[in-house]
Length: 139
Image 1: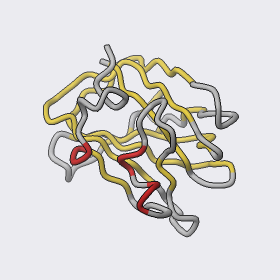
Image 2: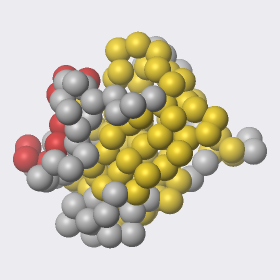
Image 3: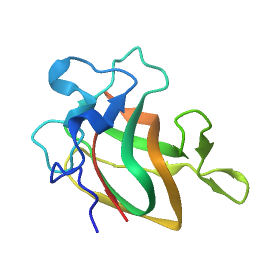
């Protein structure tokens, strides 16, 4: 079930980002299928976008899109208290997810086992041109 990035059920005030290229590229623009996207500053060396789901939630899938630029690799962190973050791991090491290969197509990523938390951060590690992202979380 989509948790509300695209529909707007996840409100703008539940979304935060490490930086934005300009106000029209704020983290609140990172909604799946939105005409536009979140763009981090070029000088942001560890760009992230965060969603507060307001309660513990199991995330089972992500859908991500770029725009005119895109994220090629990323990892996920999660927490219940905004302070003590854990990275999603596989075989004891942080799992690096393969992202988009263009700015047009949607990439669906199954999260197995699911991640459970209230706050989720997507940390981009590779991107094309700019760090640009649109997304949906599913649970």
